[in-house]
Length: 201
Image (cartoon, rainbow, N blue to C red; front, top):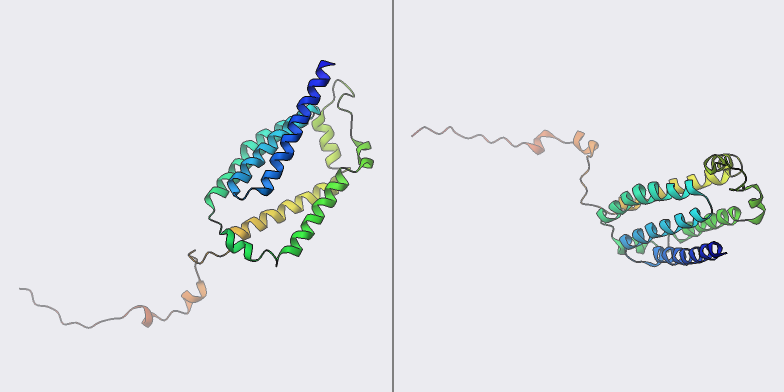
C-alpha cells in the first residue's frame, strides 16, 4: 500500500512539473530559456514513462534527446542571431498556415489518445520475458504506421522552417554570384597606366 501511495505522489508531482515546464516552453520569450525548459520537460516525461514500465522510451529520451539532440539544439539557438522584431512583422501573414499546422497536431494527438486505440496496447506485465522494445516496434510499424509517418512529415517541415528562419534577412552574408562574374568586362576591373621609367639616382 505504501508503494502505491508513493507512486501516486511521484506521478502527480512530475505530472504537474511537466505541465509547468511545457507551458514555460511556449510562454518564455527567451529562446535559450525555452530550450532549457524543454530539456526539463523531457526529464519529467522520462520519469513518467519509467513509472509505466516503459524503460526503453525513458532511457532513450534521456540519452538521445536530452543528452544529444537538445544539447545541439541549444547550441544552435545560442549561436543564431535571429531578429525577433523582423520575424514578428509577418506573424499575421503566416497565421493561417500556423493554424493549419496546429489543427494537424491536435488531430494527431486526439487520434493517439482516443480510448478505442488503447485496446491494442500490450500489458507490460504479461510475461516474464516481455520486451517493451519489441512491442513498441511492432505497434509503431503496424498499428500506428500512419501516425508515425505523419509525425515524420511534421518534423521535416519543422526542420525546413527552422533553416528558412535562420537564413531570413541577412544582407551581410557573402555569397557567390556566378552570372555577375561571367558578365564582368576586364576593362572595368583593370586600368593600365603608362608611366615613364625613372632613372636610377
